[in-house]
Image (cartoon, rainbow, N blue to C red; front, side, top):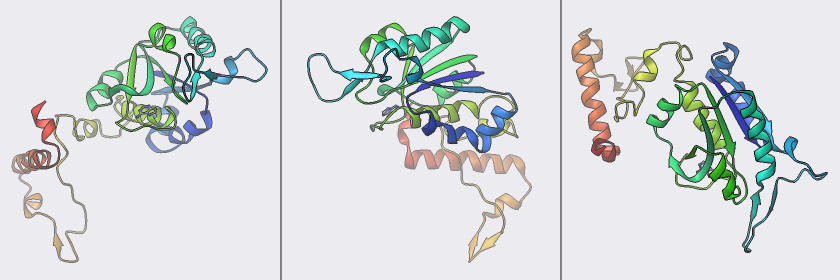
Length: 225
Ligand code: ADE
């Protein structure tokens, strides 16, 4: 998989890709991530990427020309399955979207800033608009990092134990059950006895019940889906 991220703040984006699972995935060539600074695609001396809004109103709008140049250059080099715009008015990121996108070959992610991008960018180039939640961030970069993390960990080979992504919260519309490790007892708090029984079918059944119970208490909306 290859992901091209278009941003005005590449420095803000780099650190999540330089540590832990994402770093290892890149080093193992399971994914390529490229950053493109929008200011490298401007045509004026000031490297302007935004301007005031037609019709008046507070806030700057990202201009179409640098975005067109960047996306068109990338598209002339390879086919992209999706061109994603990170925006608070996009569809809310869910596990199912990450699952779908993890199967794609090439993705572009455009990070918005200020008031957002000229509508013509969305009309002409964007195939999918994604929000990471109902709150407004200063820009799309942190959202893009969240989206990439959710996608990349699903690529086969990225997680050591292939089954571990399948047992994540949300994969069955259920939250994950409680988990325990050593010590068996800590300050009087005990690990449930059943987990030492060696009875794997019973343990599995207990985990399913716990997952269901937790989901019912915390996220009943997931059970309605
Ligand atoms: N840009 C600003 N707010 C955002 C959000 N909630 N999700 C994705 N991109 C954003």
